Length: 397
Image (cartoon, helix red, strand yellow):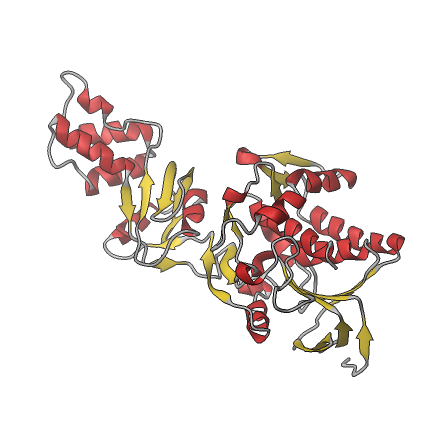
């Protein structure tokens, strides 16, 4: 029921995802009275589907170079204040069993719900510190104004506070309620927004490369990179629309329309070495066999069909070997925010204090998590940014 009564708090936090929940709990444990407003019917929906339902809650190899931002130095302060080991300590305090997968990725043994329950339990602990966190669900039609304190009007009533934390995320996965609210609010208060775009997202191939989609389901260990990004050595998966898999998702965060993606189809093998042996046959069947030694059969057959060497001399084979290690794809687009794991771009970090996430020009206004122009690589880094940016803001409240 809508109420016209203004309810005073020390801080209002918008968004009960990973960053919002953690910031609310930590602020509450600093003795603050917190109103945590969520426009959905339940908190932490994105947490529950993350990591295939196991929640890749951090990465022990986390470092600033694992993040993409217009200002690559911005994330350093928050990440240094709250490291992966700090969140692991919290996980172990709640006796949540976890395991490490490849490349430093940490997952729950049981379910992502363990992490959500941890955050909700930390919220309850605020009472022991004379703080409180009131979680208000279905708080829709949010409007924010300021005359001294911030005034937040919602379908669930009106809330006032001297501090406002925006943790409403980006545009990825709109079926879970993602909106551009954070960007609209930032502009309302005069902050710049770097245009949001899908990141960690499958890429679409068009003619003439659409023939690759006939290999849908084939995966291979590759090394992929966008024109302006680092190399990622992980699996590539061919889909019915184009390319996916961890290597491609990683490269996609750095991809811009019109640019190619270069893929090393065999990062640790010389594919054509058998053809260079003394007295070796040099023809298409021999090429197919050599490729099949290192690559999945369907991929080898496809490559032998669509890409034969310009000739069979040593020089021609060497040139073709080079081509296979620098194979260019020319995506026509991405699968969009519907399939993107995160959003790149967002609130321009030049308008925020790196140690607190507070807006430089608007005292008491904070932006944390995915809404900010800090985008992690695949593998737990975006959760670590959620925790670190939440802590940075909470310590300043």
